[in-house]
Amino acid sequence: MQETDNLQQKIVSLCKRRGFVYPGSEIYGGLANTYDYGPLGVLMMRNIQNLWWENFVTKRKDIYGLDTAAFMSPEVWISSGHTANFNEVLIDCKECKQRTGAEKLIEAFFENQGKSLKVEGRKEEELEKIITEEKIPCPECGSFNWTKPRKFNNLFETHIGIVPENRSLNYLRGELAQGMFVNFKNVLDSQRPKLPFGLAQIGTVFRNEITKGNFIFRTLEFTLMEFEYFFNPNEQKWEEIFDYWKKEMKDWIVSLGISQDKLRWRTHTEKERAHYSKKTEDLDFEFAVGFKEMFGLAYRTDFDLKNHTEKSGADLRYLEPESGNKFIPHVVEPTFGSSRIFLALLTNGYVEEENRVVLKLHKRVAPYRVAVFPLVKNKENLVNKAREIYEDLLDKGFSVDWDDRGNIGKRYFAQDEIGTPYCVTVDYQTLEDSTVTIRDRDTMEQERVKIEDISFRL
Ligand SMILES: [Zn+2]
Image (cartoon, rainbow, N blue to C red; front, side):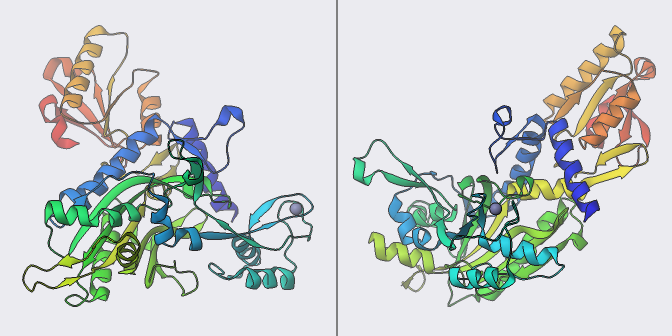
């Protein structure tokens, strides 16, 4: 335990020190469960999102991209069941007024004793019974004096000023999926897609979570990358589509360098499954704090399109061109949390070696693909040559860092710590024969390469 806490702490501190992630609103003492991405964090996050989009949208003929509004008609959330079912059970300590998620309270209590009990989705009364029987104390003050547990909706409420007072209540979206469902007919009418096909988007969702979040693992707002994959349940078995996406999801994250042995699938129990799902599996990654959910895969049946058809009155059936049959397709939904991927890649890549800390990030994920240095900074001809190479690599579309501070050893150390896969150094020999050294982050080996060949080696 000591060691893993340690690893998490080291990652958090590296993130802040090197500009990956900062605590939210820090100069005002912070705001719990919020974080801000810094200059390097943004570069890495964009890489993750672009790689996802390229793999699941651009390269596929059967998936269409969307970008829908975060504000939707409140009726969407009533139809989807979120106003009724999107809840967390909370309990307050009467002594110190600390508010706690009842499920987390119980699970943490058992975990501390080396046991495991999953209580997600259980009723308030059941949770209360366990807390009373086990006499679970307040983690803040240690006393045992709780209010009754009660349900608390995770949708953020807000008010929109442009509609009359009594109808102004609105919600920040609690999931991306509804934007895909409410546009299903628009896409059918405009693109004429044939089943099976998917609708994908990347966007921020908001959840009013009370549970403390383990750094960026659980936050009030987070960016999901998700698609709904629609199919004809009379022609294709949902199990086959489910298994197909299961494999694609895992293959993709493994292709970014995550080790197989740090991944495992976990099936949701009936009680913890969301109200719309017939089967859900999570792809868990072994974070510093243990195996936790990174991706989710859910079979949502025709639950959403059917509800929206009934409640909006729009005809959301698909017309099969060959048979003329009209029906509501079923859907399988792969969901990817981008900040969880971000944290998983940092955790997976963090290595301490004798004289250095290295982030062994996949070269397509790392904030910078390459750094360029002049051997010394007070020799104008070296600096000019290095600048030329730097500009040229930027023109070729690489993300490039420039560093002329301190000595070469310090620069290598700094680049290793932010995961830059290659460092190019311009030295005196460069001026004679137009070659540079390229140093590999992982092997630390250096090779002399012609300037015109640099981009092929990155
Ligand atoms: Zn207390």
